[in-house]
Length: 349
Image (cartoon, rainbow, N blue to C red):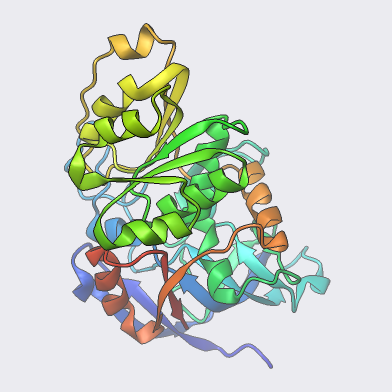
């Protein structure tokens, strides 16, 4: 089947609410030298889609500024970081044998070519993404998962949420047998943290609430702490010797409450601010106990390679909460914003 000249895509031309998501018929992108063209089978949604659309990231020195992930967005922008699909065409200097491969795209735009490069941009924010029938990607960012038993929907859930989770776990230096605390455990990154930490041999305490507690337990948490009931006291009861590693996507008050829960030499890794970005804590709990607070934005190329190994072996089983057609992107984002679901929301172009 050939590649058409035009495709359906959902774009934003300004920051705002779900109403700024507009479907359009646009030209299919042409893969440049070193790029491939991927026919999108599934694209997963992330909180970063909401925050990019809203311009909620702030800027250094101006936390209230409307901004994309790493600065101003080039409008119009096709959203969507998380793509699973098949390679249908290649640009110059790319092996044509890649055509037909089932792939997952690493959505990060990196600062260097090295294996430990830092992500400084994101597909769907700094370059066009997967809310479309086709998307281009640099050839080194597409990973062959042809033999994976995971579905396209499951594969699409991996890049941002599971990539972020694996980046947190790697930067936090999780060792087998350690006790970890996962905040926001029912969200996309939270479930990923629970599953990967469990697969790595950790004892997993998770923070969740209400009807989601059972689902978080089923995902692999050894114990679930109810967010509504005083987190620190419940964690102390469940782990009287303290925790080795905090894996935190909530921040806010939890950082101040969590640092005293760390064992000597413990690490607290932050990769989100769902509970607020303005944080206070007792710095004595940091230096007197040789603790570390570590910031973690997504993953490195090395981390993403490890994630794709897990995908090929189906060593993790991503949870797909709901699926939507592409023309219901606004509804899908509204559903994501309600946070009633456990797992990931996926769209089908």
